[in-house]
Amino acid sequence: MKTRTLKSTIPSSISKRKLLLAPVLPLSALPAAAATLSFTPDRDNTVIAGSFADDNFGSANNLSAGGVNGFDQRAILSFDVSALHGLYASIDSITLRFHGRLGDGYDVHNTTAVPIVNELYAISGGNRGWGESTSTWNLRDTGTPWAGSTGLGTVNTDYDGTLLATRTFTGGVTGPIDFTFTGTTATLTALIDGWMVDNVTNSQPNPGLLLLDPSPTLITGTRGRSNFYSKDETESADLRPRLIVEYNVIPEPSSMLLSALAGLMLFRRRRD
Image (cartoon, rainbow, N blue to C red; front, side, top):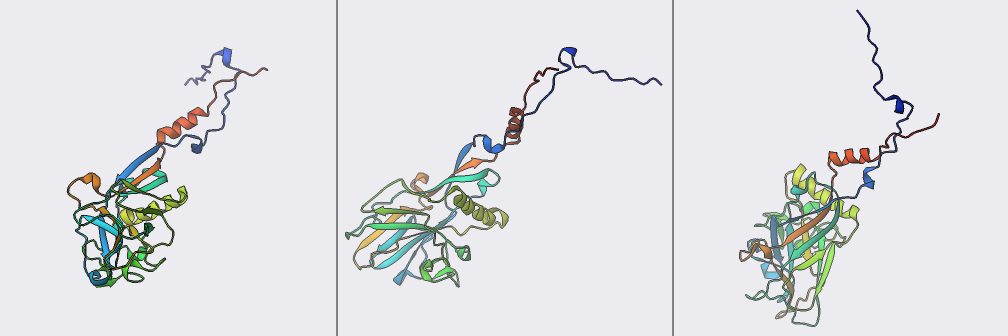
């Protein structure tokens, strides 16, 4: 049997050239691709104190936060964000968008000189099981009280004390009305990560968001509340609340390959 020796097919003109590799570019050096997804609520409700403390308003087409005729009102809503699963590397911004509901006895207005202040917080994990058709000022679900106190009134028990967003209103507003979340990319990403555990890993609703007036006007005969269309609005789907999430896309494998190829240098001559 003859043994054959493979001969080099590299032309002699470049046989003395040396292939050099430059360091591969890190993925962080590539420009991040941004994308946006928006969501409508999977649940929403307004819980009202006083004589309405045991009533549920989950099927109403409005959400309110503030004081009306001496009764405090707070809006709660959640969004299933599972469509983001596997798409994002980080979260750049989150905005909760409402449209103000005017007329039909639901005017957004203030009959005193005190502005309407609305603050937005994340509801705590201990309250994640609130029911859209069963939650009231007194209870988060049938026979089950809120984790802290009625009306989700205990900070860091019923809701996280970190303020997500705030708006101040002095009169009737239609919209769109945006509550843009404050915080860093890290904190916004952590919020979505936590919701993703509920929505994807545990296949359950996440706790959601609480909108309240920290100092509502509680005087009989006065109105000092914001009032927005809810997810049950039938006139136009565009008027329903939306959570708008802007995120950085996880690089595709092809992008990683391009990063590596960008680091290769062609043959470089070197003298003997």
